Amino acid sequence: MTRTYKKNLQETPAQETTSEKIIRLNERIVTLTEKMEAQEERHKQVISELTSELTKMKEETLAIRQLINDTDTKITIETAKRDKEMIMLKSTQQEESYTRPNTVEMAMPTFSGNANEHPKNFLKDLSSYMTYKKVTPADKIILIENCMRGNAAKWFNMIKDATPTEDTFKTLFLKHYF
Image 1 (spheres, helix red, strand yellow):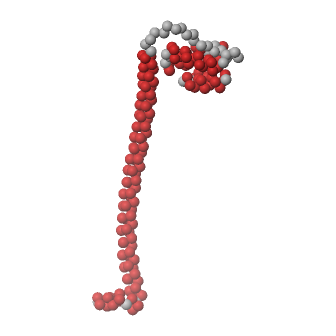
Image 2: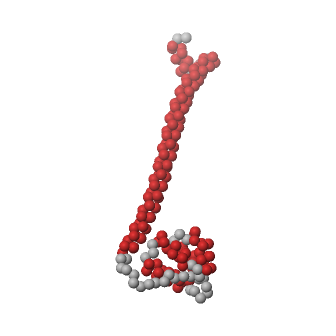
Protein backbone atom coordinates (compact mmCIF):
# COMPACT_ATOMS: atom_id res chain seq x y z
CA MET A 1 0.00 0.00 0.00
CA THR A 2 1.17 3.42 -0.76
CA ARG A 3 1.05 6.32 1.53
CA THR A 4 -1.63 8.09 -0.35
CA TYR A 5 -3.82 5.06 -0.18
CA LYS A 6 -3.28 4.71 3.60
CA LYS A 7 -3.95 8.39 4.02
CA ASN A 8 -7.12 8.05 2.05
CA LEU A 9 -8.09 5.05 4.13
CA GLN A 10 -7.62 7.02 7.35
CA GLU A 11 -9.56 9.92 5.95
CA THR A 12 -12.39 7.73 4.81
CA PRO A 13 -12.87 5.00 7.38
CA ALA A 14 -16.07 3.82 5.67
CA GLN A 15 -14.01 2.59 2.76
CA GLU A 16 -11.67 0.55 5.03
CA THR A 17 -11.86 -3.14 4.98
CA THR A 18 -12.59 -4.98 8.15
CA SER A 19 -9.03 -6.22 8.55
CA GLU A 20 -7.68 -2.70 8.09
CA LYS A 21 -10.10 -1.45 10.71
CA ILE A 22 -8.93 -4.16 13.09
CA ILE A 23 -5.28 -3.29 12.47
CA ARG A 24 -5.95 0.40 12.99
CA LEU A 25 -7.95 -0.25 16.16
CA ASN A 26 -5.28 -2.63 17.50
CA GLU A 27 -2.64 0.05 16.95
CA ARG A 28 -4.85 2.54 18.74
CA ILE A 29 -5.35 0.07 21.63
CA VAL A 30 -1.58 -0.47 21.91
CA THR A 31 -0.97 3.29 21.94
CA LEU A 32 -3.65 3.89 24.57
CA THR A 33 -2.42 0.95 26.66
CA GLU A 34 1.13 2.35 26.62
CA LYS A 35 -0.16 5.79 27.63
CA MET A 36 -2.28 4.26 30.38
CA GLU A 37 0.64 2.20 31.71
CA ALA A 38 2.87 5.29 31.70
CA GLN A 39 0.23 7.26 33.61
CA GLU A 40 -0.27 4.38 36.03
CA GLU A 41 3.49 4.29 36.66
CA ARG A 42 3.50 8.05 37.30
CA HIS A 43 0.55 7.67 39.68
CA LYS A 44 2.35 4.92 41.60
CA GLN A 45 5.43 7.14 41.87
CA VAL A 46 3.36 10.11 43.13
CA ILE A 47 1.54 7.86 45.64
CA SER A 48 4.88 6.53 46.87
CA GLU A 49 6.26 10.06 47.29
CA LEU A 50 3.12 11.22 49.09
CA THR A 51 3.16 8.17 51.39
CA SER A 52 6.78 8.87 52.23
CA GLU A 53 5.98 12.53 53.00
CA LEU A 54 3.00 11.49 55.14
CA THR A 55 5.18 9.10 57.14
CA LYS A 56 7.75 11.86 57.71
CA MET A 57 5.02 14.28 58.80
CA LYS A 58 3.59 11.71 61.26
CA GLU A 59 7.04 11.17 62.75
CA GLU A 60 7.59 14.92 63.06
CA THR A 61 4.15 15.34 64.66
CA LEU A 62 4.93 12.64 67.23
CA ALA A 63 8.28 14.27 67.99
CA ILE A 64 6.60 17.66 68.45
CA ARG A 65 3.90 16.16 70.71
CA GLN A 66 6.57 14.48 72.84
CA LEU A 67 8.49 17.75 73.06
CA ILE A 68 5.31 19.56 74.14
CA ASN A 69 4.57 16.91 76.79
CA ASP A 70 8.15 17.04 78.08
CA THR A 71 8.07 20.83 78.20
CA ASP A 72 4.68 20.83 79.95
CA THR A 73 5.99 18.38 82.55
CA LYS A 74 9.11 20.48 83.13
CA ILE A 75 6.98 23.63 83.51
CA THR A 76 4.67 21.90 85.99
CA ILE A 77 7.61 20.65 88.06
CA GLU A 78 9.31 24.05 87.95
CA THR A 79 6.06 25.79 88.95
CA ALA A 80 5.63 23.42 91.89
CA LYS A 81 9.22 24.10 92.98
CA ARG A 82 8.66 27.86 92.73
CA ASP A 83 5.41 27.61 94.70
CA LYS A 84 7.17 25.65 97.42
CA GLU A 85 10.01 28.19 97.49
CA MET A 86 7.46 31.02 97.73
CA ILE A 87 5.72 29.37 100.67
CA MET A 88 9.03 28.80 102.41
CA LEU A 89 10.09 32.39 101.71
CA LYS A 90 6.81 33.80 103.03
CA SER A 91 7.09 31.59 106.09
CA THR A 92 10.64 32.78 106.69
CA GLN A 93 9.63 36.41 106.17
CA GLN A 94 6.79 36.01 108.65
CA GLU A 95 9.16 34.52 111.21
CA GLU A 96 11.71 37.29 110.66
CA SER A 97 9.11 40.09 110.79
CA TYR A 98 8.15 39.22 114.35
CA THR A 99 11.30 40.11 116.24
CA ARG A 100 9.50 41.57 119.27
CA PRO A 101 9.73 39.17 122.20
CA ASN A 102 6.47 37.77 123.53
CA THR A 103 5.79 38.85 127.07
CA VAL A 104 2.20 37.63 127.24
CA GLU A 105 1.56 33.95 127.78
CA MET A 106 -1.20 32.28 125.83
CA ALA A 107 -2.50 28.77 126.46
CA MET A 108 -2.93 26.39 123.56
CA PRO A 109 -6.66 25.85 122.92
CA THR A 110 -8.04 22.33 123.13
CA PHE A 111 -11.16 20.67 121.78
CA SER A 112 -12.66 17.36 122.86
CA GLY A 113 -16.03 17.48 121.08
CA ASN A 114 -18.16 17.84 124.22
CA ALA A 115 -21.55 19.54 124.00
CA ASN A 116 -20.39 22.51 126.11
CA GLU A 117 -17.63 23.40 123.58
CA HIS A 118 -18.49 25.56 120.60
CA PRO A 119 -16.52 24.60 117.44
CA LYS A 120 -16.42 28.17 116.05
CA ASN A 121 -15.01 29.52 119.31
CA PHE A 122 -12.33 26.83 119.20
CA LEU A 123 -11.39 27.77 115.60
CA LYS A 124 -11.21 31.45 116.58
CA ASP A 125 -8.98 30.66 119.59
CA LEU A 126 -6.85 28.34 117.45
CA SER A 127 -6.34 31.01 114.80
CA SER A 128 -5.35 33.57 117.44
CA TYR A 129 -2.93 31.12 119.03
CA MET A 130 -1.30 30.26 115.67
CA THR A 131 -0.88 33.95 114.85
CA TYR A 132 0.54 34.70 118.29
CA LYS A 133 2.97 31.77 118.17
CA LYS A 134 3.88 32.45 114.51
CA VAL A 135 3.15 28.87 113.49
CA THR A 136 4.41 28.08 109.98
CA PRO A 137 2.01 26.57 107.43
CA ALA A 138 3.95 23.32 107.53
CA ASP A 139 3.46 23.03 111.33
CA LYS A 140 -0.22 24.00 111.53
CA ILE A 141 -1.62 20.47 111.10
CA ILE A 142 0.78 19.16 113.77
CA LEU A 143 -0.41 21.87 116.17
CA ILE A 144 -4.07 21.14 115.37
CA GLU A 145 -3.49 17.46 116.15
CA ASN A 146 -2.00 18.44 119.53
CA CYS A 147 -5.11 20.51 120.31
CA MET A 148 -7.49 17.57 119.88
CA ARG A 149 -8.59 15.62 122.94
CA GLY A 150 -10.84 12.59 123.55
CA ASN A 151 -13.39 11.88 120.80
CA ALA A 152 -12.10 14.82 118.77
CA ALA A 153 -8.62 13.25 118.78
CA LYS A 154 -10.09 9.95 117.54
CA TRP A 155 -12.00 11.82 114.82
CA PHE A 156 -8.88 13.75 113.78
CA ASN A 157 -6.84 10.53 113.51
CA MET A 158 -9.41 9.24 111.01
CA ILE A 159 -9.21 12.34 108.80
CA LYS A 160 -5.63 13.53 109.24
CA ASP A 161 -4.39 11.89 106.03
CA ALA A 162 -7.07 13.83 104.13
CA THR A 163 -6.17 17.20 105.72
CA PRO A 164 -2.97 18.54 104.20
CA THR A 165 -3.94 22.15 104.98
CA GLU A 166 -5.56 24.20 107.70
CA ASP A 167 -8.44 25.17 105.39
CA THR A 168 -9.28 21.53 104.67
CA PHE A 169 -9.27 20.82 108.40
CA LYS A 170 -11.60 23.74 109.12
CA THR A 171 -14.08 22.61 106.46
CA LEU A 172 -14.17 19.02 107.74
CA PHE A 173 -14.21 20.15 111.37
CA LEU A 174 -17.22 22.43 110.90
CA LYS A 175 -19.10 19.77 108.92
CA HIS A 176 -18.58 17.28 111.73
CA TYR A 177 -19.00 19.43 114.87
CA PHE A 178 -21.17 22.38 113.86
